[in-house]
Length: 485
Image (cartoon, rainbow, N blue to C red; front, side, top):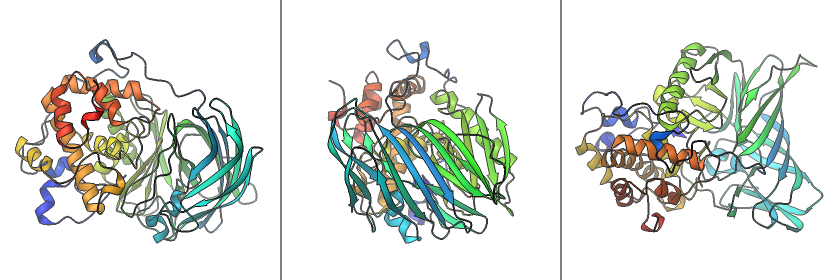
């Protein structure tokens, strides 16, 4: 997730913010050398000998017992309300007697713009009772909890259905909203809050800009009913829409490894191309946009290709990028990006999130740096930042690895996680050497694909690069306890 903001002059040289109009790379490079070519050769897409003998040749496969989620959305004719039904087949890997869903639209920022979600009904043979928990969100609550009528053992499955209603608020930089030509909703359904191997994530919402969710990848099918004159762009590989029926069309998609879902419905003019690596990219712009869909698709294709050269093959078969009528940044979702303003820098940051959080997940409450710092680091920093500037950023306040509730405000979070976190990864790469660091990060991606990674997983990947881990420990990204024995 990225966002623009106005930066005080004293902090301008340190800017690395979520969705900032000036990127980390652009700002730190202002007084330094111009961008240089990468200092290490492009890595192979899927591991290989350059990753070392301990790195698997094949990317880790998703859990065959991962949740199966079917989402059926209906957008109202006025574009302000979404009603839906979610069907979940859940097979835990830890015994549990409940199911917990995170209601992201009830977070402080989203409700401030008029967004809200309620659960209207629940069905399931194993469901005993259900209700809301506050979790620091606005009413009716941030979590919805189903108490089961007995213990669900690891490896056993249950199926539940939830009916829900989402109210879409006024336009603004949020994952839900509506404007004259478009409606959009992301995390616009009860989100299964399970961390594999750990259990339910009941982390509280916070009053700063940033994510606090943790969810597993799920085999997800999406159906959207929308007015027939509108176009749908969403997570997953989309089928052709149905023919018009009573003024509406039905759109479907499927994404076998989606942690979450985004949908945008509007008067989009679209373009589709296939990247050199075989990723089908579809972009959409609204009437009056100063950027054409073809230009936006070219940008996305370049970012997908460049980042695959560094981190390995793009995680998904498709990518959709609807351009919203905002100028505030962007929000990433599996195989889809809600882009609020035609910024190349923000787009690249959000494309990088396809690897970091989309594929290599993390607890966004406990370890937000594992996706945001990596997405910022991915903004082509080779040779663009002087050591003096890096040292200045790394001397800034705050621990990179702090949890979301440890930051006093949004500014402190951005400065530590985005600015200092991105700089720490740049400095770690320089300390270890670009080629071995790049290989270690690719191995981290290979091993932890489709899982919920932790700082200890990254430390394990960097175990043979003590100079890199020393930098990350000093920045508060890694703790000594994270390091392998």
